Image (tube, rainbow, N blue to C red; front, side, top):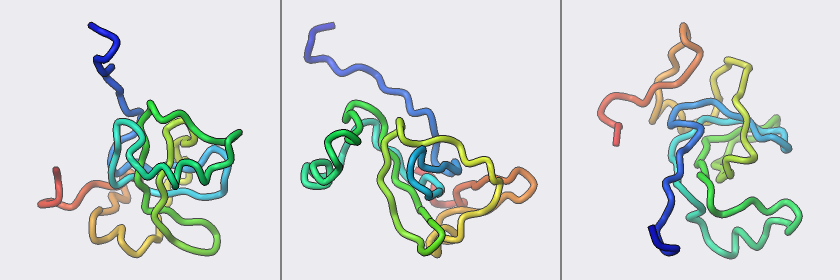
Amino acid sequence: MDKHSSKTVFARYSIGDLVQHRVYPFRGVIFDVDPEFANTEEWYEAIPEDLRPRKDQPFYHLFAENAETEYVAYVSEQNLVPDETGEPVRHPQVPEVFEWLSDDRRYSMRSGLEH
């Protein structure tokens, strides 16, 4: 393997997983995964340098919520931990994409929407 070959990156989390941010008070459900950073350089540079995550790790798109509002977040794997509340996310787009499996306390992608 030469130095220009890409290494395989394995994502710790999957679509439908409930996660929360390691530092900031928000949680969400993953609806897409990038194997490595795939946002704009402007977005990346806006993160304070001492908090900037590495680009060579999975990044997750979340239907996110905090105490005040719902939004879409883009978060590096190093900044996520499993959400242990077992509670559904109130984001208004979640029902369009996922079904809440209350017995399992997790989300499943709605049939017909799988990749």
